[in-house]
Length: 176
Length: 272
Image (cartoon, rainbow over all chains, first blue to last red):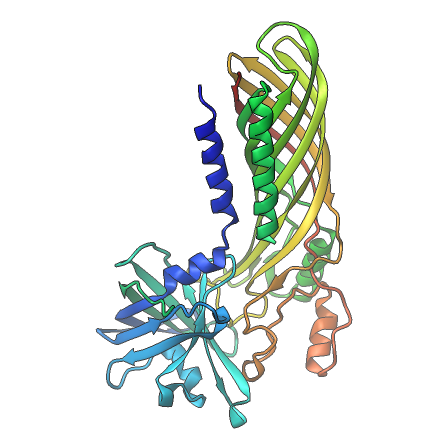
């Protein structure tokens, strides 16, 4: 049996294994995401009190700006009139909503989070971060994910859970 | 660091191809089995964590205990052949190792925290030993280098799993280390296939290589409280320092593991 194809196969596997995962995660997250639906679930003493569902809430465009630090990828806000995701309330004290964008990044080695951030606070000296948990991972254009954000009550129980149902409508987020 | 992995792997694979071209058998193999994941620093963290949260913890962190390891790779096996002669074998292996273990703390309110450990290594191994026809026993030693990922998530009582910033010790921590091991490998040839069983004992070499969450939100998040980018092994000191705005003088969780593992596997030999 010829061994060359097998050695080439092993070589490709090693190369694949060695590729930087952070780049792959950034690439799969970048693009224009449609916010198909938002669920705001309110809790009291660990029990669900209410669930509010709204649909067609605009877009988030996550760019993959190669050549810059991954943390400085831009996120352009295209929310529907009068709508703002719960997690983005924390970015209210930043220039995000005047300029129409903030920054975003994924993780180095895991697909569990997507982080949004902007300069804010007094004299825009602080960095404000909002981290969404990626509830469902998927691959390829047209894919759907759920991004979740939690707010706790003073006792550490969930007070409010926001689940954004996201759909990647344009996977070409690269600006290179 | 991965560029170095690639470079070393390329050289090794090319070397294997050249050696195989000279008539030396080449094997592709996969093996899997249980292994211990002992980390003294993590045990200190777990003990401190359990004691500090004793009033809300139902079942505390135990350490990583037993996990599983899967290896796959290629071996050039000098002096090996399909015959029933006695002899000896010297082999060199290049392989990838994926290792996994979990720890968990349960709270009295039915929520829990999961500490999910994954380690990805590139390994080099050398073995030497006698062969009795189809069977061989090799004593081997090797080195591993790679990354560990400790994914700490919080699962609320209703099943909501969060990797967000609302809890102190949630995070995706990672670290690099280099390790060494010794072991023994028994192989039995069945035509071009080989069954193999291995025992290995070893550990990481560097103590001061720490787990760190590289999310920029950690440590810089002034307006949302202090969210540590490393896991302190002395929680009372850590919280005391935090509340008094002093620096924490204790140690942090190190990415330094010791292991004892057994594996069984299958190899396929390309003979020239």
